[in-house]
Image (cartoon, rainbow, N blue to C red; front, side):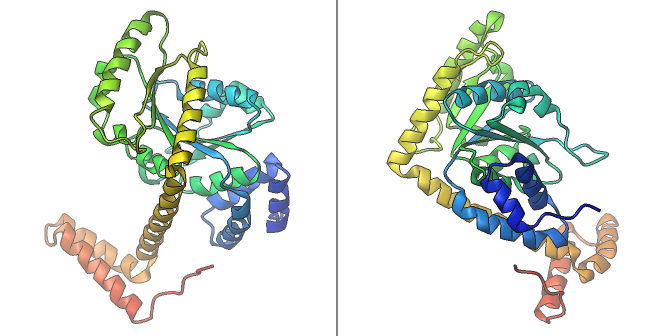
Length: 340
């Protein structure tokens, strides 16, 4: 059995930008084993002073829009500017292995081979909206390792955009040229998150449709309050395959960063994200404590059967379980939890 690396050795490797140490550290924070939680928390605590100096970019879009190809091309453009790029690609989980499908990494052919880039596919698992549960911690570790551009790619399945927008500085949404078809599946809430919109695959026979889509989305975005004050989300045309429009995207991201920092919104958004992170962790820990409590486990089958038989409403059953859990905890019989 391989000896688990110490916190000190992982931290030293991260400080030295050792990608092997970084990968091992991310594996540690993704672990659900009780034996790993305390070490992961301590490692994150020691990495915090080294983190926070990157640009955090969220990229989402419907399946087939070309996210991976776009990230590969955009990432190489950033590297040519002298930046170090980390990509946290949140993959759908295999239904059999519950592991990560590594397709995104193979589609980012140039980034996956470049020494100034790091790609980490992570399984979405059961997390809300397909966003990996530990993406925030992974992002901090990448920053501590010296990566100054962090790209978080979502699977694009609804609520994942909300979760990712709550951890990045700039949220970019990729759309296909066939705007009429796209509108059928897009939600109003997603448009309210957008800082920059890109119409990808704007080349060849699709160029006229892309130009029309650009006009339509530009008009549509004016109907919503911008996610960033005093910033009207631009709609740009790109072709990741032909690497067209990328310079304009780079300039737009730089303009957004300058504007957000000058207005104070950059820091304000990060502060709000820290509070959101804390609150979501509280909910997660409470849910975990509830479902793992012995009294809840014991009462669960009977409540489930009563709901299915129509003897209890779902609300009544839920209240019964929660009240039982709360009474048991207030009586001091609940197992102690590790607050390290």
